[in-house]
Length: 330
Picture 1 (cartoon, rainbow, N blue to C red):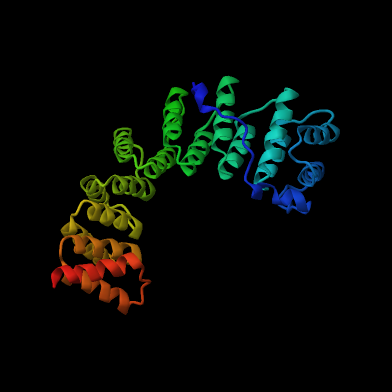
Picture 2 (cartoon, one colour):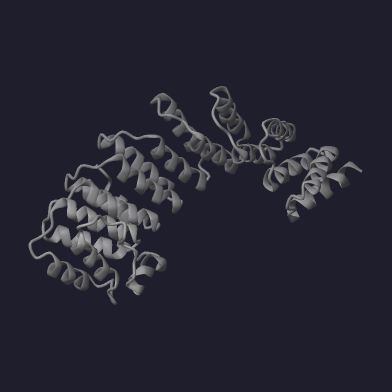
């Protein structure tokens, strides 16, 4: 069961979530032909002058569907509102369904949860997941993944992990997307040890590792200053012939920089060049800083010269690190 403390109070969506409701000219051409009434209702809901008032939404729906709604039409309506970012109206419309005891399933709740997740309304998404479990509505990995992603965006790593554990408790198979979102939350919170534990769980459970999951884990190690674990994950990626990119190497170089491991940072930088990966301002800067710490002014100056020659953007930190390295070597 999802823990009671996962649920939260009602949140007001971000201001941009209702921009379409003020114009009354939302693009609804994607709706299937023959759904004229649904289209008119959506248009009416989006043009309400007081979309935050439950009564206004309830009255509109009561008049439009006095006989109630079948599950498929409900899905189309809720998905339509979610697609137009009308999160507040979407939640009220779901409450109208619940009040009228309409048949609701994971698709209905999923549409509203996805809308909440996109609007960074993580407590609302958690509340809806809890409601699904309490009412024995069959959940899916999609609804849980969307909620974990919302927690990731809000840097709520503890809630993200609770949801990941809840998936197993509710007999829902977690996948790469589930772990990617949870790892992203751990990265934001600098929880590198927890990130490594999640990678171990993925390997043990034979959940496919991808660039996103490994990148998040390496970034978490960077924030925690654990260069050894960062290099361990990078080595595993190479051994498994996984795709890598500039961000992955940049995070590993930064981890080495924080750990005063200038030699390893330089090795990684050279590996990037051999792999034809773009050396960005961030990766060059981190390598120069690492060389400065190690007193390797020649290497620092060489990379700095390469940046100037390639017309790379130079920031204050990179420039100061290069100058400092030269001063230390003089």
